[in-house]
Image (tube, rainbow, N blue to C red):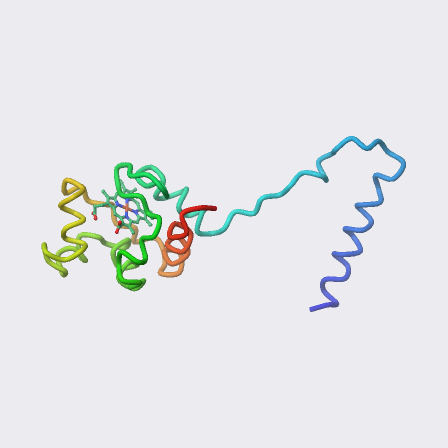
Length: 131
Ligand code: HEC
């Protein structure tokens, strides 16, 4: 692993030196690269039109969602895959049944194209309620 990294490190050092003698003006090399988490990227691509982290929108604010589902991540994943199936299986008096009622019976679209791991990463991201 070290062997693979070394040339990359050498390149970085060389790149860092190439500005030698130049001005101190900040250039593109000084830009801060913000690496988005997969969870945030998938949330932004699929969920943001209805959900925010801290405020209710078309759907509920998602901060702290794990605790509301008794930390049952498997069920949360099933819900995002097909919310109506979970609501039907749980019944009207369950948490998901009552939530659906509270949100004026607005159904969430099914996200069958997202893998379990994709959804787990979204849930981890939104649960924290911040970047
Ligand atoms: C078209 C709007 C819409 C989109 C897009 C959407 N949701 Fe929802 N979501 C809702 C609504 C409405 C509810 C509440 C009603 C219900 O339970 O069906 C909800 C409920 C939820 C809940 C339960 C919240 C709680 O407080 O227990 C989770 C978790 C959730 N959504 C995750 C997601 C994720 C993850 C995505 C993106 C992959 C997503 N949603 C995309 C509308 C949407």
